[in-house]
Length: 315
Ligand SMILES: [Zn+2]
Image (cartoon, rainbow, N blue to C red; front, side, top):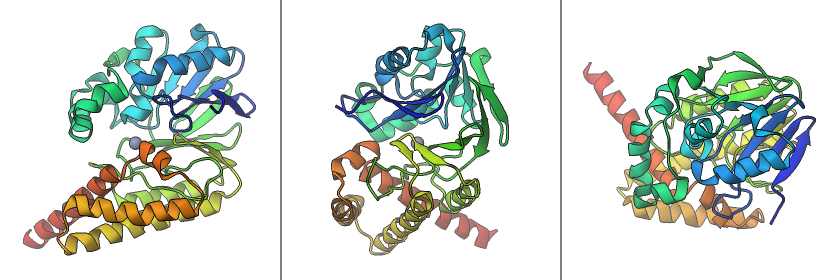
């Protein structure tokens, strides 16, 4: 098993949440200055004990953990935030304005997740507990958070979800990317676009990539998974190219009136072959974001676009 903790910069530690015993699927990043600590990402409730084990193994007393910063409210990034506030009532959760109401009342978020996961929702992600409104800090675009000896700047970065921030750590130059920089395993030259429904927006995603590329970060800290520093320009290009390529492939299959299951099968065949050629185990990428959710996201996006065009022509 690869290690639970890895120091990636001065005062920045990556914790491997070992999602259902799997290494290198979900990361959280711990910032600590010897006085107070912050987390970027909480992970889901199902990995909360592993998260807290990691925090303490890093030498951080739980009383010092005061800031829980989430890139967006999907369950693999922020699912544990309410359960953590129960354990650490002195902490605050920092969230995008669009995501904030769904942490206070997760019912719609859970209904949407239940459509994807069905009966597996709770076994996979654990209990989702509301965050009391007075424990929330709503973060706006461009805001600077001075936490745990670091200054993080929030960047509103829609595309994967409308409630998404990336955070640039001015202190180290590292960029915490949530899902907007895609999914990539350490050492593998392949970036998968995680494109789940319902808020995928390809144009917005391209704009977010352009905005973040211009920052010239020293490293991309992906939630899925780890920090990538050697080939950042290549990383952004590979992600954006595949984001659109897959989009066009899905749109062509829609024009052929293929069943959704057939689309998943064809995308999987092609993409798994590319992954094997890149030296990766396709299953690892599938745990982070499945082809089913990728296809469902694109279908919803193209149908919304078509409906908007049709109503524009009428209107
Ligand atoms: Zn996400």
